[in-house]
Length: 491
Image 1: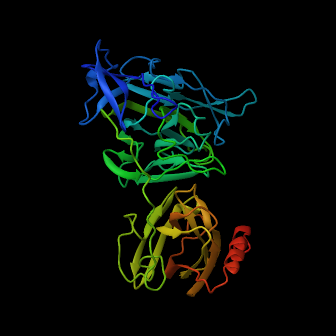
Image 2: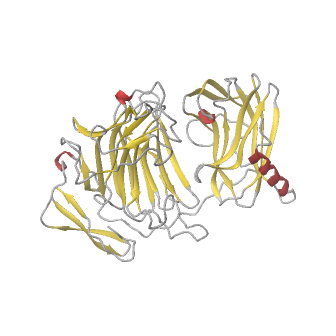
Image 3: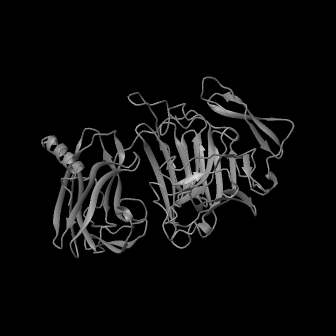
């Protein structure tokens, strides 16, 4: 169906137990649905619950004995097709099959004709069969555990070239889990030129996403996306964009005003999860999906405007950092102001004590951000120069990284990753940089303390991020920025 393409031409059919609903066209700024005769039931509609305010668009409860080809397509690909992944996506029922009321996507490890490790897996899509625009998607699934395994529930546009190839076309990631860190799940929206993204993260404390089934859901409306896990909201996005290089942005809400389709797959290896190792158990490398349900409202108001960005203001001393002197105790797990994070094998804790942030490391993890302290929502304005200062020391000499990153702009760095050595004596560190990218109201100061060969306790005080005033030499800040990018300030 197409609402925002050259003309209004909507012919998709919505099946319900009481009849069929079909799009009749656009009335004003609303997408309208009207009922027609000759009902045709959605498969397993009798087992699919209703949702208040929604109609069932389509579902698959996987209650049959084989994949329903009226809904799904196999999407075979050779190894290395994207993200340096190792698997071949096949059409084999060894890799994709329906069993005990579930869809199973299984990764297999075999040998090629040269005796080398070879991996196969499965990917299925609904492209050209169950494309839709706007609605609520609910997928109940259980992730596999194991280094290098990477299950995903995601959506891509039916016509990827309409606004331009990825990322300009947009991508909706409903769920991704890394097999080596199955307590953490991600939901992400990709868009823009340059590539931008907004991501939400859910980390479980007791259960894991591989221990049991969980509901992964996204609500997609003309001016907003909302992500849920087990009905708990964890990410809201309403300020995306897209553009061709050198051109103005397309009218909002592009690119998410076109048909998208569902995708389910289990990747092996790649740039994000890393490759399998001897600990990966391919006997249990199964991504299990209980159901996929897509609902839609009777109508959607398409008269939406992109919200204006709100930029944080500095305090009376010119500091954009909140609680930079650590005078106030605060929660460090609430995504507000200071926020302590652990990823990919990192274990530890943090506390504010005696006007000092103290970071304890039990396991340093496998990546530099395995142990991480951040403060988001810093205003970064193109053309302005900034200074980062802080005091730091440790129980024994050790290295860590400081940077200012862009979570909403593809994780580029405004202040480049800069490695420095903390000694046992309190030392003041100063870094300056010039912002050269699009205005961003969500710059993020990061201290990354993982994977540095040390678990020594770290102490941080007096953190400041401030704009360099007109009387100061911004050229020196730009020169410092270039030195940091070249690594001359590291070590």
